[in-house]
Image 1 (cartoon, rainbow, N blue to C red):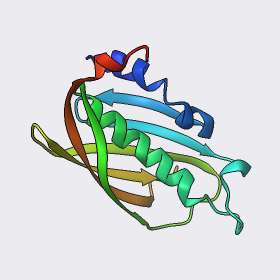
Image 2: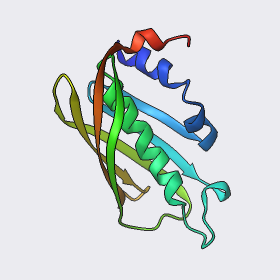
Image 3: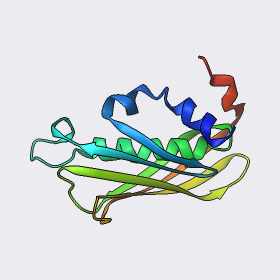
Length: 138
């Protein structure tokens, strides 16, 4: 699948759309997306909820890991939050670190508008023997 087809496929990620995540770039083993933090993303102390930040990171993780056209599902993630985010734009970028026929590992960086690190996530996927094409239209 080419980047345009991957982008179209992930338009079906209804949760990411509901949260307000916008996919910006797709390439082999990589992806970039943004989320504009507003009131609905804030926790009780007025900073971006960890789930909102994680959701942004998780989308680019999913897009990057599925970008080769093979169904890839997360089996493990670890996230560290470095800085509280309040309002404004968050950008997440996923980069493939390692890939083989069954497993692949990614590093995901989430930054604020000033380029400061907000979160760092590492994730591993299991790569199934199914083509992503098989899920189009389901």
